[in-house]
Image (tube, rainbow, N blue to C red; front, side, top):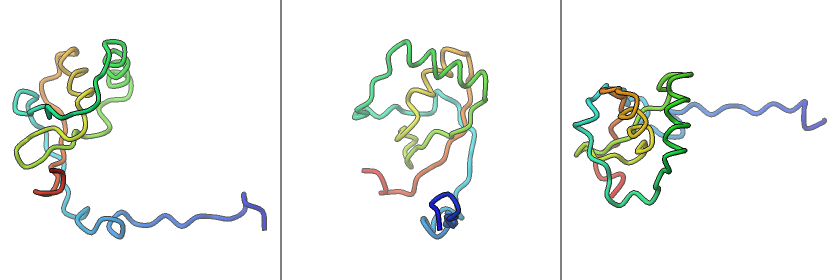
Length: 101
């Protein structure tokens, strides 16, 4: 059987992460969110412009991941881009307490 004729079975997200069933997306004001000072990734102005262009073209497709204290785990560049675009609310997903730090 050739590789192209084999099909892979997609594993349901709940099987990979049992807590996934309890996830909810909530819009939050950008001002509420706290950038993580330990964030290792720094976005250049060019990258932020590219992210902003993507948000304008495709919308905000990946929510910002935050912890229980509203500290940003993932999505710093998206928040910067939204600030430049004048977008005041972003979709967020809150990670389970203790998951990140």
